[in-house]
Length: 312
Image 1 (cartoon, rainbow, N blue to C red):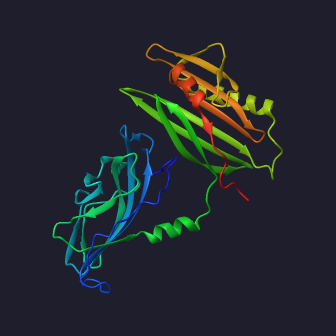
Image 2: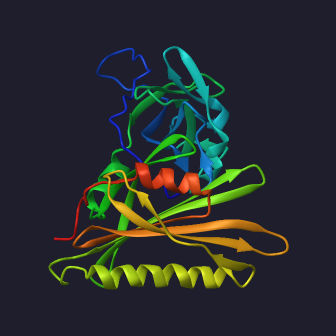
Image 3: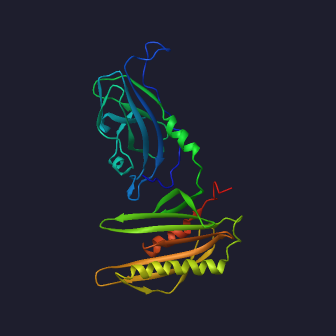
């Protein structure tokens, strides 16, 4: 599961076990280490319902002392304000969903569960009921957090815009490619039997290695790149280039939009793109095959955040 544009929050884990003594550990217990993260999307296609967000919980379970412990996604719930939320089918769009297994004494398992919760909530209680009222000790997933911290942080920045009258906010990571940081957001939007896409590409020169970008050259390269994509698609349909027009960005600057009409015997649609310099080292290209109004709304509300964690 690649979760693009997710915000890690300090989610509260509530201990649910009451011990006979504050300094003693039960002879039999299930250890459940977990960590949670919020996101509006799971994978490329699964979007949270209106007013909801996804809570993605990574967990590890260990059986200490029981002959068997049955693990099943149906045995878990997230409790918020005295409301229990079951796991969501979006679980199966993660890279490693939690399986239904039986743990023998000493056995371990791990995986992800996804819950849909109200979008304004950041505190929850994770509850595991099991089948036999096993004692459960809850803890933070320290191993996973330690590994994450040991990895170098990738360059990233936030992108916000409106789509279909809904605010979109995400964080996009980048790759270091031949002296440039390339960041790409690609999002498919399903509408009944059809779908359209929004793709935002950001190319940043690393100033230690390269001179500032030449605006005229970069604009022409961006246009050529999109034209090559149109020619590739034109193997299945013909494209009719429409007159360019100016559109307004969120910061008030004007950009040139290159619209095309896709024409064939079986399908018709649109393709449009616009490129502009964010600064002397950064060029942004926005492309979509949604309607003109949708595309202009994206441009009018598009805000690109500052580059975080650039290579040193």
